[in-house]
Amino acid sequence: MNNLLTIITVLLLGYMLYPKIMIKFNKNVKNVSGDEATKLIRDTKDLIVLDVRNKGEYQSGHINGSKLMPVGEIASRISELEKFRGKPILVHCASGGRSPKAVNLLLKNKFGPIYHMNHGLSGFNGNLKK
Image 1 (spheres, rainbow, N blue to C red):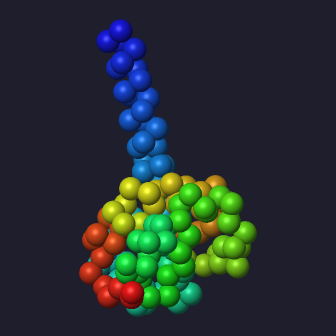
Image 2 (cartoon, rainbow, N blue to C red):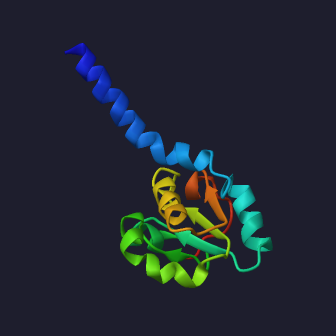
């Protein structure tokens, strides 16, 4: 019984960590801090900021000009992002837990370059619009 519990625990942890591990080693993704994200927003022409939180979170404060697309909707709404193909995309959520899944969906659909805000808005020092 202990072996089964150990196997289940390892599989569950692997499943939860898989998105983060995949983006960490992907050359088409750069993990950035909140300060680096602020600089990217300021200095990168044609940068798309993709907010993958839910609507209520977005309405409580978001990066000016960001596009809301909750992580659970990306797969079904990927065609809306087609016009941004080849443009740099900064992806973030609230704390960095959901955004790796979004990044992996973008990679699977051959988007890039992609910047991933490691700790989401919790590590962002820029101004938010309400």
